[in-house]
Image 1: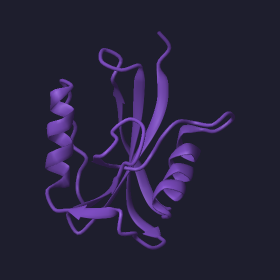
Image 2: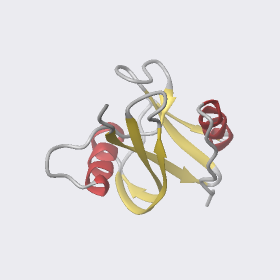
Image 3: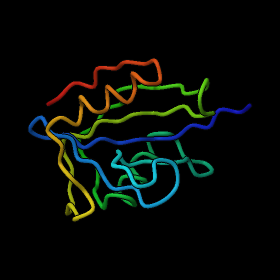
Image 4: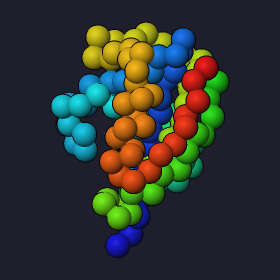
Length: 121
């Protein structure tokens, strides 16, 4: 089974994480970070920047790669997680700030047998 690389971007500010409502696909009807599949010829970083712009309408300015999570045992995915602390663009009404969003993310990852510390700015 071939593992597919995907991206996920978390926008973090003042100890809160911005999540978007997923209308379709994997994670439908849930709040999640912003990301998706790589297009042909894209690097992982290029895909994260593009997906953040397409899905959130936000342009990443200050960011770092926080984790690489392999879901191979449950899904054929390898998620490259980026944290963005500075951006430009307008936040829409389909997005919510979560004070406890990082705790939520840690709990979701623990269900998959993983634990990461994203770090909050």
